[in-house]
Image 1 (tube, rainbow, N blue to C red):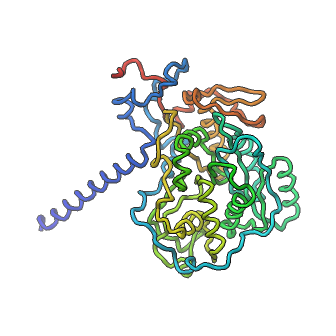
Image 2 (cartoon, rainbow, N blue to C red):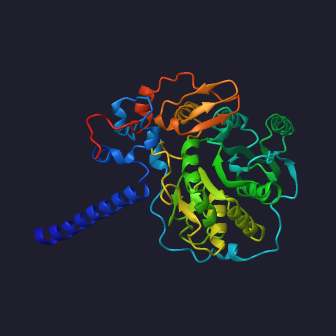
Length: 431
């Protein structure tokens, strides 16, 4: 009896440890953007950036060890990746989406459109923030923080918000005044309701395709409860700029999902009539996705001839189904920081984005991190960032940027962040 029991138990235990090892290796290779403690202690010299070695900035030696993932902002990073990349390409999409219909635009008219200045250098990245008319407070927080960026190391950024049409006259008048003041609102005839979110986002694709055209190298899409890590975004996409444009692929900078099934109940439910298959195509979750201009045009052209029926999940529909319908397999979807070169700065700078929901305290904490990763300059203000990466990231912001009131970052960073010293500690020798 005991022999019959112990042998299967031993096999199960062996399989468990083998699975654990495989998953650990996947985490190490795909999420290699977060060094572990052993890397710090055993290979210190390979991870210092030569250009910063002479800086007189000093940080406590405690920064050689990553802060806990259960503390502060770090507790959110566990959600930034969702399983290994898919090894099997989707060759087609469910029947309803496979049929091509007569081409039509997502919207026939615009209520509000920004006028981006393109007379000087082209934009490096235009970031489109998905919002709703009633959520002015969220938009203002972005404008007062990371959304007020003008340039990083000379490369131009722009931030705009896409909203839909509302029937409330007061709200419409308010958004019109907001647009007049800030020149950063895209509003079409598409409804502002959540059920129409895919069309609202695709209206921004239409705006890029026909109105804005080819004025930027990259377009980022994010939500209005997110803080974008501008220095990391700049470093990674500028380092791989030419390669990524040629590859015509999107990069999931928040979460990449492969081989997950559609939910059949709740807010994110998808009906079996619309999507009968048990697995969704690989897609980027909506927190932050970066696309080159040509891929946006290609996807929009698919949207023109595809009926979405009641598919209301914009990331699944646009970045999964319509992308798959292009017939290019998974070559056009990548995991940010798992594909391409690591970047030139050489210091840990956190994730690409913090998705923070309605928590304004966490929002400002994340902004405090981003602010101190850079040297920030406005017409009236200059701040030397507390993190050594600031020696290599010189950012110009407009004058409305919110300066964190408490710039004593030592204790804050130890609880909320992980990184490296600006030079190896004296007791570690470089060979």
